[in-house]
Length: 69
Image (cartoon, rainbow, N blue to C red; front, top):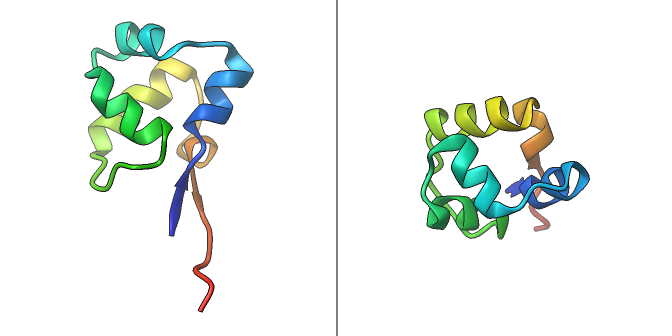
């Protein structure tokens, strides 16, 4: 499964969701879905905007966690 680490990086950089919304132009619901790891289909352009705004890599935002079977 893919896990979002957006909350971690935003916490480290002390950026609120509303600030990220202003920086990226993304909707607050889009940011919430990624932040709370409830979103499914995140587009490349969305990830690009977040990475640019937070000055980070995709690997800082997303992490692969093997499923337990």
